[in-house]
Length: 313
Image (cartoon, rainbow, N blue to C red; front, side, top):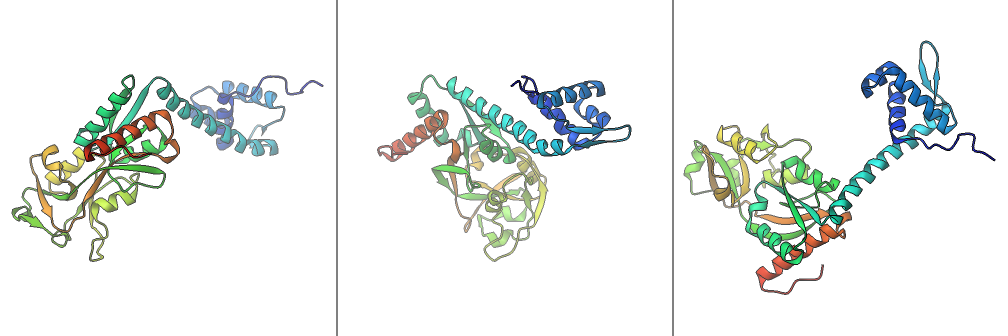
């Protein structure tokens, strides 16, 4: 018996139009939002209804409403559109793998650190045909893009949110970054209690709070909460805010050599815990070929630095 709906399947484009109209319930407003003409939108919705075999909207001279079928199918349409978006992301990830390409993210100057160079050198030795793209990312981007799969792995500093696995690469002290005219810069070393009244530079809300709470040491050992100053998105913004007296921050000790800036001074802090450098990757992607290649290179590089055989991953 022939299918009364015909043979054509709904297109993804039509489903997107349907979802926008279901939200606006006004052809003119929906068409403007979609940057198409109202007659074009009307024709596409009619074609979609024909392909599905059910009316999606009730129309009269004054209003547009969803039919029962339209309300029922809206959730399915949305799930289909979102699934297609995820499919495209995954396809891009596998396209990089199949083309022997890996995308490595880095926050701050992590890609310039000796351990990062060692990992990338081992990666080239193990996989000479693999091309490596390095992306320097902002505070907000580096974890978001890692979890989304936009980058394969990242050189970063823990702590990290759930869903990210780590291989520790190095440990170093943290130091205070202060404006050069701050009286505390005349001391050879400080304690956290000395800095309790200073405003601390903050980061955008997209940054996982667990990460910045560590860097701000919030709360402090005595239980006091940190007083925050201006919000910055990246390392240059952070250093500028400190140099202009808007607040302080804590950075890895390597910042002395990597980020010398006019107006910025670095001072040791006796009771400030160290920071760990790590290679991170999404837990759900750990066995993808590109991710596994970098993990194996990092494992080999760390074993070589210790004079040991690589451990099993």
